[in-house]
Amino acid sequence: MSGLKLRGVRKSFGAIEVIKGVDLDIESKEFVVFVGPSGCGKSTLLRMIAGLEPITAGDLEIGGARMNDVDPSKRGIAMVFQTYALYPHMTVRENMGFALRFAGVAKPEIARQVDEAARILELGPLMNRRPKELSGGQRQRVAIGRAIVRHPQVFLFDEPLSNLDAELRVHMRIELARLHKELATTIIYVTHDQVEAMTLADKIVVLRDGSVAQVGTPLQLYDDPDNLFVAGFIGSPKMNFLSGVVAAGGSTVRLPDYGDQSIPVAALRSRPADGTPVTVGLRPDHFKRGGAAHLDLNVELIEHLGSETYAYARFGKGEVLTIATQNDRDLKAGARLAAHFDPASALLFDAAGQRIR
Image (cartoon, rainbow, N blue to C red; front, side, top):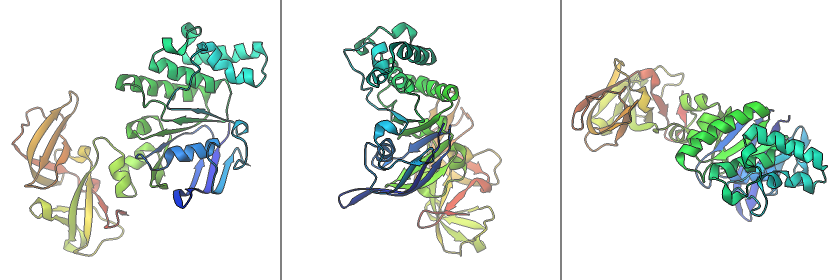
């Protein structure tokens, strides 16, 4: 199996630069997810790795070999697209074996490899059906099977679950995780869905405007984001952001939009000067009974989700905060809420959106 390296990779369409100098190491057998909003460059970067888009500048290596000018068919990759791209007139078996037949592989070997892929993906009963006779999830498994039979060094997935309904997406996420474990191969997966990224990835690459905003494990990005963008993008429900001003020698933050309430903050290596504007980040699950700090808020809406209950609350006309209430089913809209939290859980960001540590 092979790892992959990107060094100073750039992509321009005329005068417009869409990938702006990406440096990235992907280890062999890692499941890496490129995630970010629409237009951030994640699919373009994937297509450059596949050889479907030329690299304007920089280097791509797969298995230690430079691949910039290597034909896509010789890069040792297999790609699964958002649209399944199955041949409608062929059976499942014929679709899965087409690339091998085109490459001149002997029929017995094609049959062996197709049968092995069908076993892994549990497609046995479907092998003689045509695509129109399959569900969306079944078609996606066939598309994955067509990639498996090629035994690539790297699998590339471009938003493969976006056409599926919510329940089937959950099922396919489980299948993809199982597939990665069984095949023990390198997977690069593109999605705009941060829940998919959090549940599937060994490592997440968060992209923004053609640049890497942060790289890390799912929990590293959730617990320790480098900037406001990553903090707001990773996590569902998203992080709460409160505008504040540093006070009391850097030991507290005053919140003008919350009745000038002051909250203590954990000791930082670099203490901003009093009067410095900052943004305080608090995740909904940071609010816990008995925390040393609290905000006095008015509850506007309660959302009961069975195992979880969320309160949407604000002070005056300030921004609505989302608070995980530890399944407090007695809380009602219109009630006053002292939302407690541990000061150590509050994250601070400077005026440029960078983390203050």
